[in-house]
Image (cartoon, rainbow, N blue to C red; front, side, top):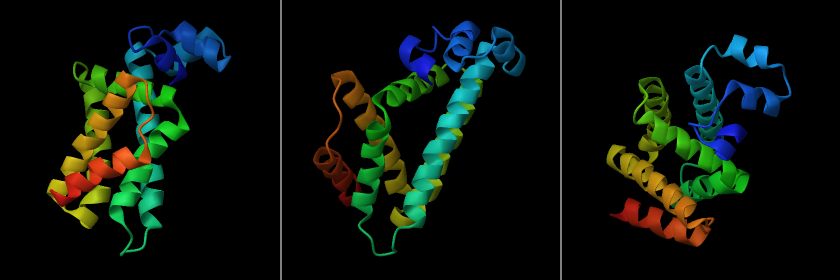
Length: 162
């Protein structure tokens, strides 16, 4: 993810990954036979970590907990972890528009969010929160800002209240 954050999807090479990981070039070429395989592995890893964080957050949430606050915290945490990571994930999502294998991972990632949220807020609201989350992340990255909890809360509340 660091290489993608620094160089973009188009700048990803086995050589850069090997250098970042401090392993021989042959190791990255062996385990990831193509750049496409590196991209799929990066996106799969990011998706897995994100969904596990979200699942953990929601598994520990009381049934009567403030869902707006929980979703807000999950979105803000994306930037607390690392703005660079958010850049890399956005790069991968953009690449998924043209690369079917990445698109499949992105769709599964979105589906995981949907499956975690829809039992609590309904299918339409879960879809709307997913779309709003993408917009919040892209807007913050374009402005080179970290979204404030207050701003995110206001957007999510609007989405959930209709």
